[in-house]
Length: 80
Figure (cartoon, rainbow, N blue to C red):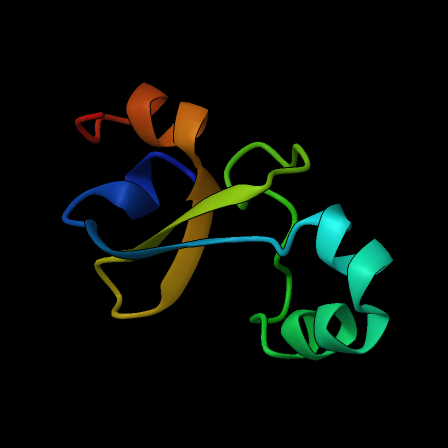
């Protein structure tokens, strides 16, 4: 889990969303290809652990990359 201390100096560098379940029903191969293209750990907020669909990608002060949900992004100080 990402702590508030790790977030000092962090900045938003991107955004992505999980592929829609409708894609899975219409084209399972495309859905599976989209899932393979996601970064490791996608699907859960790295701050609170809750399952998420929309991911805010952040670069931490130590230059590592993490992602959080939109609700946690606001709770930890990023503008909506």
